[in-house]
Image (cartoon, rainbow, N blue to C red; front, side, top):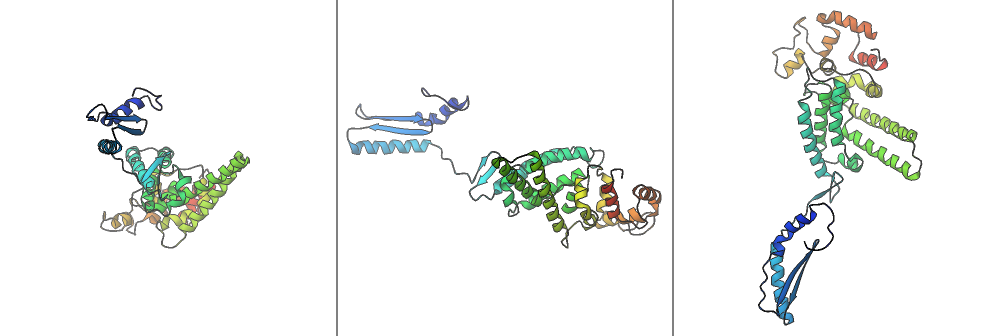
Length: 347
C-alpha cells in the first residue's frame, strides 16, 4: 500500500497487503513497449489495464490476464446466515443457526458451572440462582427478535433440555425429575412462555418511548400484566391431562403466582426430594433398579415421598414439629405445606 487513507483497525493496511500480495505479484509478460499491462488494486476493487496496438490483440491480452487474476483470488462461499449484534439471521428468518449457536454456547457454560453446583455441600439456592441467571442471559439474548419463531423451531426441545438441566441444578434435584417439576420448583418459566412475554414487554415499552409516554410506573404495569398473562398460559398448559410431574404440579399450580413471586424460603436437596418423589425412597429406587422392593425399611409399607411426609412412624417427631410450625391438619397433603409456605414468611 503506497497511497490512500487507511480506515478501520490499525492492522487493516498490513492485512490488506497480505491479502492482495498474490494478485499484485502476478508476473505480466509484455512483448514490447507497445504492449503494457497493469494490475491496480484499491480497497476492495481490482482493475486490469492493458494497452495494445489494436483492439483484438488488447482484448485477448486482457482476457488472459483477467483469468490469471481470477485464479489468484480465493473464492468465498456465501454463508447461510450472518451474525449481527450477537444474533444469527438466516434468509428465512427461522433463526435455526442462532438456536444452534445458543445451544452450543450455553452448553459449554453449563458444563463449567456444573462443577460448582453439586447437590450436596454445594451453594444454596440463592447462589445457584446467580449461576442460573448467567446461563439464562445467554439463552434469552435477543428474545424480542426471535421469540415468535421459537415454538416453530425443531430446536425448542434441545433448548428446553438445557433450561431443565439448569433448573435441576438450582434446586439440587435428581436428573430424573421432569421439566415441569424442575421449572416449578426452581421458579423458572419454560422458554415457550418466557420468551414471548419478553418480546411483548419490549415492544410495548418501545412504543411508549416512541410516543413520549414512557414512565417507570407504566413500564412496571406492562411487566406485571404480561407476567400475569404468562402465568395464566403456563397454568393452562400444566393443567392439561397427562403432563409429567403430576405429584409436584398438584401441590404448586393452585398457588402458582404466590409461589413464583415469594421472596422467602429456598429449596434444598432433601426438600426437593420430598416435593418431587425422586430421591431416597424405596419406590423410586425400585423403579430405577437400585432396590429389590418398594418396602419401607421401618414399617414395611410402600415407601414414597407421601408416605415419608404423612405416615411413616420413623418421622413422627419431625412430623409433629412440622404440623405445629405450619398449623397443618391431621390428614395434610403436600399442597397444604406449599400453602403454608407461600402464605407466611415465618413458615
